[in-house]
Length: 172
Image (cartoon, rainbow, N blue to C red; front, side, top):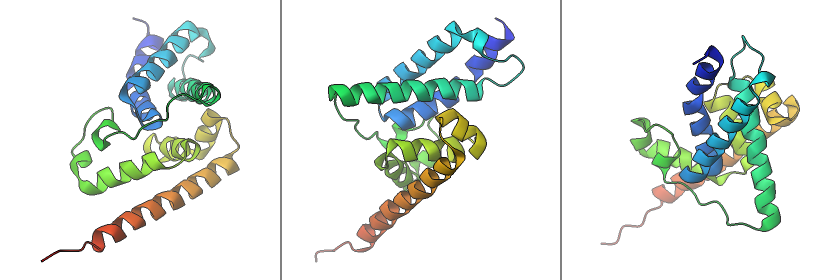
């Protein structure tokens, strides 16, 4: 196996994690990853050798995701359902068992796909703002705005959840 294919294979866990967070459905996320890998392997010459394929692969995946969302919107296909918290990660971790982690994952699934993808790119996948804006095909200012608004959304959702837990009524 050549080095380019090996480098692409090493990115699969990250691609799966991002796809599952975007799609909120394990099977559809795996389909998205497969489509991404098929497109990448069929266009291997478009990747600049010597660079990490990560940004290139995430760009391909994001474009495929947007195409799929547009197609579904035109056709009026079924809405995405929230994942169980442990399904949001490609590899289960000990943190996912923690109630706070589950709550954050559920809140993340509640915000708009544009804001969710911006937050995931920077906070989870570790892309710089410049890299994430290039992958998502948006100006850096738009990315920062989506991240800020997404964080506000998350804060509001999480604050509402903590208030509901604090107001529990205990019947005698």
